Length: 107
Length: 119
Image (cartoon, rainbow over all chains, first blue to last red; front, side, top):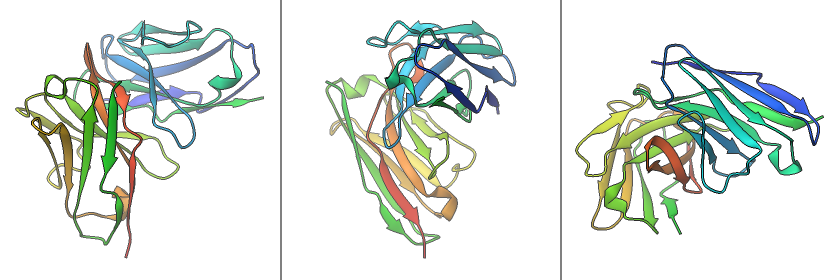
C-alpha cells in the first residue's frame, strides 16, 4: 500500500499568513493526488485534484503543486474561514490512501 | 445540484451486520463510480471501497476486505455498503462520495452516517 505522510500535523498561523502543507508518498503516484478541507462536524470538501487543478468554486488563494512523491498545498493569504483540517489523498493505485491530516489552527 | 444522502447508521453489537445506503440525486448516477470513506471518532479519513459506474469492478481496503460488500442499484440511484462481522474498529462516520470527472478523487460527499459497534 502507498503510505501518505503529511507535515506538519499541526500548523499555527495568523490571518494573512502564507502557509504550506507538504504531503509525501511512499512511492511515485505521478500527479494522482487530491487535497481536501474538513471543518468540524462536516464532510470533507475537495480543493485540488491531479495535484494542481483547482476544483470549481475554490478560492484562488489555494494552490497545489508537485509530482512523483512530493506535493504541497499552499494558501497564499489565510482567511478566517480557512482554519480547518487538510488531507491529501492518492488515487494512483488501490487501496486509495489519505494522509493523516494537518490541523491548521489560529495562532 | 448534487446531493448524496446516507442512511442506515445506528448501534450494532460486535459480530453483527448492518447495511448503509446512499441515495444520489442531481447527477447521472449510472455514469459515475462511487466510494465509501469512513472516519473513526476524532481520527482521519480512511477510504473503504469503490464501485465502478456499472458495478463491474469493486475494490476494498484491506481492513474490510471479505467483510464489507459495496453494491449499487442504478435504477434507484442508490449505493449500498453491506457490513458483516463488525468490530469496534469499524465505529465511525461513513461517507459516500462521488467519483470526480477526471479521476478517482471525491468531488461530492454526503453528510455522513454514524454507527457504533458496541455491546
